Image (cartoon, rainbow, N blue to C red):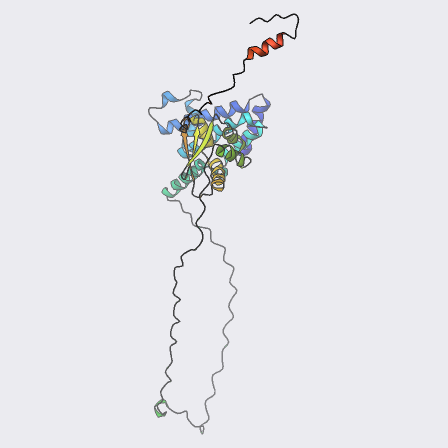
Length: 326
């Protein structure tokens, strides 16, 4: 009921309800319903205790497990994006509309929930036959015209020759055309020049890649990508590894809207195809440092080193009130 949900949200908002708190309370309710399905006997101690048993018991049969997972993911994502939102009420309204209509949820969790609902309908024996188009009323067919019977031949007319009285004859032999020969396909070896090797990956690879996907990645995840202390990327073969600082950062970036533009930009920059993304919580291994080079040989006669004390003495002589002694 999107209209009822938006009306309730407007009433709560006008009464001073903070939309972030409202989404967090809805998230807690969905979490309790999910725990009751996952652990129906031993999950009572894990519930928040904010909702009475009658409410949980009435809502639990209406929402399957996959649908609850999709709703919980949407609520948490919207609540996490509120601090960076320009209109928090609008974001909350969009979230409620997507919660009411599962066909608007195009995420992996939303598709899995719709697939589970379809499987349940198929298991219950529901029929999915497409409605047949209404048949147009057939116009009555006209009655066939009655042909007049042929007039009998006159008595003195010559009779038609009988088949046995006709002379024998041979039918001309029909020539069957021979099938045209099938063309022989020969494999032609490509004479194209080999592809040039991909350019080496330097230290500026990741900053340039982050700059290239600006505008293609949603603003929320991009704020994590552009933070060097939160995430950095390396390439090893066909794997683009994103090293993140926490699991929360990994959950913010582990989605198609982020990895898709990153992989596309990396393939263009490296001149490769078939790259895939991987996530690791931690810091990337440091590259081995180059061995220290041997010190250059000093000439036998070198100029004496500059002494800063000489500068201080020369500066003190310019002022009468300062006395500088060695």
